[in-house]
Length: 316
Image (tube, rainbow, N blue to C red; front, top):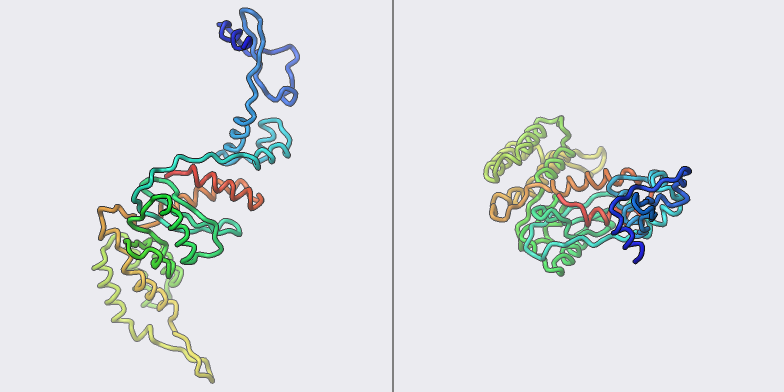
């Protein structure tokens, strides 16, 4: 109390300095002050919790490594590591439960696979889970966990993986048009060897600029022209075993045909503001991996803790 009274009564003060300044590692880098009127001296209060939080935030959002933090705060590497391990992740202010459009997608982070559900209009991640593989059960568990918190999904945007739309039966489903294009590109390449592949790839590039009726006509016209081409078989010499000669073109066509009912859902329900891509999450993946790039070699537990902090704080 006496110290606070001295501070309040001192109208003039300046940082205290001696003729032999203390080394930072001797006084912990704490700022000293001296009143220019009465000569009283004091120092800032030490706030270890705030310092630990500051170090944790700089470690993540400013991509500061343990070596960087050691140099900045004049502490040992073991102290820095312990501080990072014990840092608490503050709870983010969650949006009130409400109807939302959900974007669901997964990405690979080292040896782990992270599945995230995001609300693009709110700019927040609704939920996430570490999974072994992208299965219907994993998607269903994440969806149920979010719904138990009071959110309801008015529509879902998915990446086109087979079987996953069954988890969201009963609500509009949009397959990401960019992912669909990437699926076709992987199967045909950007320079298909066959004329059929070239003529199938061309309209696929117009997905974002066309409508369902127009694209359906083009796909049906293509199939009518190349139906027999897709049915061609190649037999293994001396056996009855066979395979489709143009398997990759056939696979690209079947992918488009299978996902066609979900490629233009956003046009059917304009009032729901459904995105036609998963770009909101794709952009988040880029930001997440960029922040993690400075922390290569960290333990799986440390990486997951960093990811959790970013998931809670990151907004679009």
